[in-house]
Length: 341
Ligand code: ADP
Image (cartoon, rainbow, N blue to C red; front, side, top):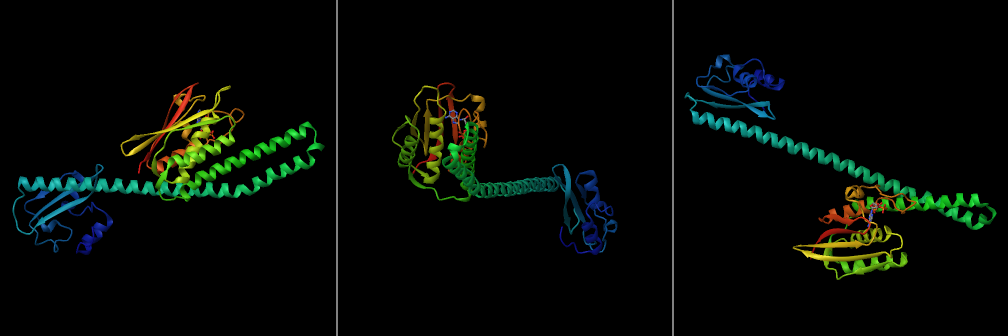
């Protein structure tokens, strides 16, 4: 309530209702019911001078989440009884006011929570970016000096020495991959480009030739792919992560083969990246998208557990969905949707 026109009443309102001084304002608070006064008696008011010209008054509690949050006050200058229709309208108004306030409060709380989440997300991303960026130089130093020791003094070391050195180099390489992947993850937010018409077939072509050169014996079968609305660099990263996983999680003695296709689905294109690998048990379908979650040790399959979390973020940013189907021991297919042009 703002200015109420009487110092006594203002002080009571400022102190918070119920003021304990006037039944008109206090009763609806205490009884949680409307008080309709057909013949109002100003002399019992907290500021009789101010209200002496009022003759008919209704005060109704406004309930917000079951608590009386305030009073809805209606006054008439002439004297007449409140009709049942008046009462119904006033009660509905007070109830609607309460509901509207409830809505505003929960919207405000939601907005507040969203702001807090956004802030902590931004802080985390900033931390991930700084940590991964600043870690690059020391890791490079460790791996390159280990390389120098290997080249210059390798022959002077015994077997155990060479084993230790190899472990330093391998750990350094893994650390470098972790840092590179973390940087890629944090850059998804810090470096956003516009979504433009992008030839997904051309992007796949570049990814496939890179991976086929890296993984001996790998086969990447490509069907004709559409033009979609995308950030070409992120689409490259998405396909790279999914296809390289398909080639990596292979069964012993089976030549790695990944098949990439797309099907129109209304305004969307549904992409499928299918491999012929070890498969994934359905109980892990959610866990694998969580950052750092892996189903295998590094001795079995090298990795950082960041790839699918990156994929998830990329697809979400494009307004699409990412999911999978799998037959353990046989194959896995990752699906994602993108908006067509
Ligand atoms: P990384 O491959 O670096 O471990 P990802 O986030 O890309 O991290 O994948 C998370 C986990 O999901 C992997 O450790 C692996 O256990 C499982 N996974 C991902 N792709 C496949 C696939 N195509 N076939 C079988 N398992 C997979």
